[in-house]
Image (cartoon, rainbow, N blue to C red; front, side, top):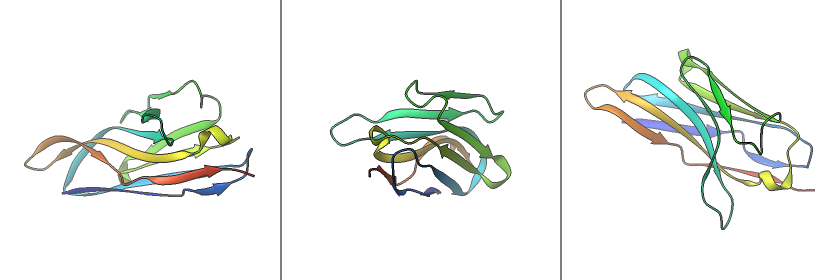
Length: 120
């Protein structure tokens, strides 16, 4: 019923930048909180950044000052601007959203993930 599709991952050198996008589509009435998580090999999935519908944000300490989350409610899209990337940022990044779906209620949606690799 709802699909989240990420884009923008890839290979970048340390100190470089990437911008991730995640667009939600389907029978959406309203999207509440949206966020980005990441999972590195052998590690648990962790919250990177989150944003409320009104624009309030919170970040993991490891990315504060380097990453910026934003959203476009009209386009049902969330973005993650990543600057000053470090090798330890290497992970699969997942989009997450709390979505009210017509006839169903609020459900938590996940994207399929996009690989970000920071390496020289």
